[in-house]
Image (tube, rainbow, N blue to C red; front, side, top):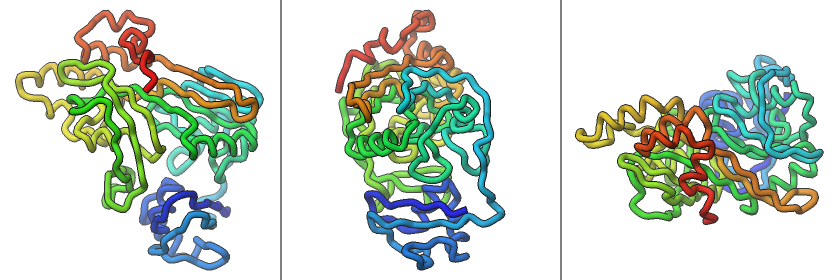
Length: 334
């Protein structure tokens, strides 16, 4: 099976680019390169090759990794908008977006296949309909393309920052400045390939964050993406000293960051976090075919409400049908 990728914006070493695109370890990517299975313009490439924007890279996946069909998987999905061109769904936590190593037949793509949803061919093989992604344990709004026309136009709109993606995040500590623009390059961690990190020479990344509500040991933030790098929000918030509550990869101490006098309260909060408290709460863009404005919202999910109520010290939040609206999250349009 051959897979072709096009380098869109940035110069990057081949092995790093390949590991990122295929969700492989850098060792796996290097093995493909060493076996001369990675080419551009018909010529095998070296791992250290620097990729220029516009370069088309073809990867031959050996028989040990045979082509995978999108075996149907069944799960209940909630769609907030759907027509013949696209669908916007409220992705539940725990659902991987597209097939890859370790998740060939239990992803969102498989669920959509089981539902009979028509999907675009995608920008690369293995990702039909996928215009942008959410991490496995991040819930919230996700748009998928049904037609190739819608896919191309949505991808262009995201590239031009015409798609507004807003997240709600509960983070440890307090932002020193609000609102704040976090601009720091992101790359794969040199030793832990499943993690990302802020690093010189990484891909340009911008995140905009502002405080919605300030609690004793945590802030509820309204976070808007300026770019869309892997784990971007989680990495950037940890970088400025406010990691997301419940984030197992980028916790940087979690409740242990809190002073001893408040440690017991922080530990109760941490114990109530089943996953990272990050939710894609708002999505707005012009319809790629009709041009009609779409403004969609998703409330704070039920599994994260106990942790939010604990952080706020407000038991009434558990009874609120719309806790984000209650806290004024949707009132801002920053």
